[in-house]
Image (tube, rainbow, N blue to C red; front, side, top):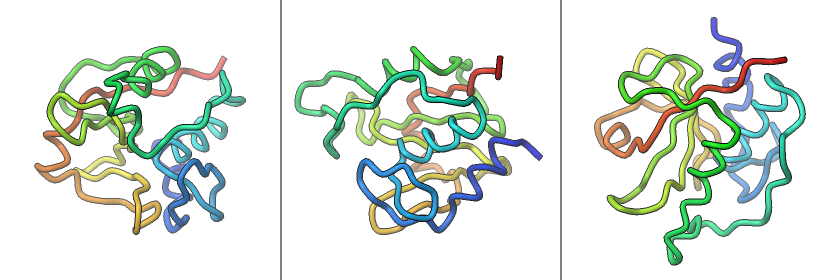
Length: 140
């Protein structure tokens, strides 16, 4: 099984905490990706500044997408593969503001308010919101 998916599944059940990134204690969707990064790729490449829950929607600045392009490996559009990081736009024309890890067989692992880290079906309402997909960088 994919090491990224195995690590992400270890986070299932972690409560949702905005700006959190500690398995078992609390995390948000970015914290989940950061925690898996630390396990898979090592130290984080840059400090994460404080961010609001609206992910810069008022300014239209796609901060999360730009960071993904800096530190992850862009994958072509199409069917996700196990271990892919999925970025979601929650509304057409909006900024990317949600992340998850595709776990295979039509499912993804993500953290969201009221549910914590869970593995959910990548149903049509989620799939149509995918803005981009990325891979974690190879360990060096």
